[in-house]
Figure 1 (cartoon, helix red, strand yellow):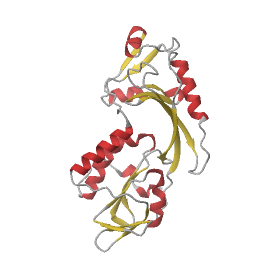
Figure 2: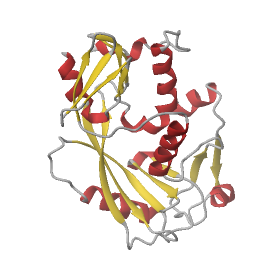
Figure 3: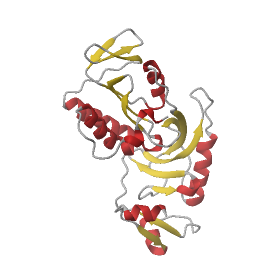
Figure 4: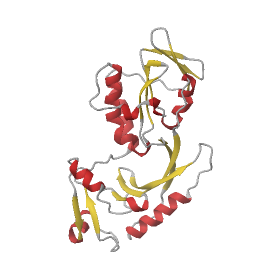
Length: 260
């Protein structure tokens, strides 16, 4: 049914098996007899490089990067005051709170507590040449993906609801790597780098996009769960519309901060 919904939305889908499946991705285990190919599917060469490229493009348009730990947001006389832990303060016409799983620490300073939860994901990045991976291969029933990057091959996924201070459990990364080797028999598992990161997840799996109740000049944009990079551009468009007091192209009421 999920594929039917995609097709109705105009997503191009090809159900593949046999020689066509092997053509799209050689070296799959004989256990894999059918798959679904999405010709329009896109991935990035490296998430970090993507973020740095966005920063470079923004700076070319006059954006100035100011680094530091923010302790508080507050409505000012003519805008928003951003207070840093080291005592610095910035004044701005608007502020966008997009601090991922740490966002609720700042919404609390505005009198709003958001149920954003750190949902941990794990991955292992293997060296280049570990497998002849032609494209991203997703194993939805097993909860992991294998992705080609400029720096190697990344095997990642998992969903672990744990606090920031909980011990890291890299057994999850190794379990996914073992599974990947079962589906990709030629995968070389040596020399990988393990990693864990926290996704900002909400109870209803929808992001928080909208104005803070304490100030129309403070905008929330967090809680995208597994889809932060995927939905970043669309979220930026919606937040821009709110700042410029334009009507967004879609109904954003499902994402309103006050829904909890």
